[in-house]
Every structure is written in structure tokens, then in C-alpha cells.
Image (tube, rainbow, N blue to C red):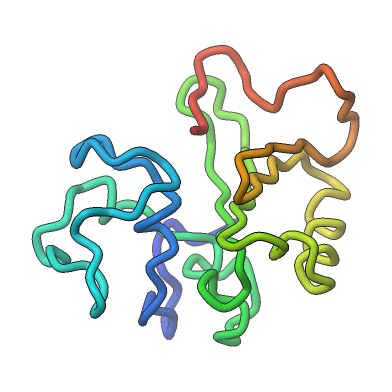
Length: 151
């Protein structure tokens, strides 16, 4: 099982991938839009950031990827997440591409292949495309259960 928060020794550092990728309702920030509070030194309201920002911890922070900094989202080019749907309790895996081509790099392709052997995953490309990979995936099946919102 993955940790709910950051594992010891892992910190965001200069990574601000979630500040761009995630939608933040409290700030009326849409997904894939840089937060208005993101500056050269990172979050300018870090000590007073919204609860949804405080609660989010990517897969790298939670220990789901190797500890080497090269696996951190801002260096790998992909922010990984894993969570359970509020209504279904179903586990979701998500890979959000930070720059065009990152999901096609050999390292990331290997991870997608390994992770998707026994679970379904949604790949979100920088250009807005989405793709579901994993066991029992067909072109007309959705990864979402009724009532779950993974956007």
C-alpha cells in the first residue's frame, strides 16, 4: 500500500507540476492552467495554500516511484497519481504528461507497461488526448465508475 502523504526524505523541492496540472476549486483554477500564485520561487501562498493543495501528494512523494530525483515529476515529465473514487472505492491510476513527448520516453513507456499489466490507467497527454491502458480495456470502455470524478 502507498503512503497517504510524503514518505520520509521526499519533498517537492523545486517541482511545481501539481500547480499546473491539477484543478483547484478553491482558487477557481482549471486543470492544465498555471496557478496565479505560482512564481519563480514556487508557490507564493504556500503557508496559506488551499486544503486541496495541502492534501495532494503525487505518486513520487508517496513512495510509488524510485527515490532518485530523476523520477520526480518535473524531471520525468509525467506526474503520476493513484487514488480511490469517493463513491465506488475503485482504485484509479493516472499519468499526466507535463511536456509533449514525455509519455513516449523509454523510461516512462516502461513504467506504463509495468503499471498497466495488472491495473487500468488513464494517460493524459499534454495536447488534451486521453488514453486508457491496462487489462480488459476496449475502445468503448471508460475507466470511470458512475459518480466518480477523476478530472
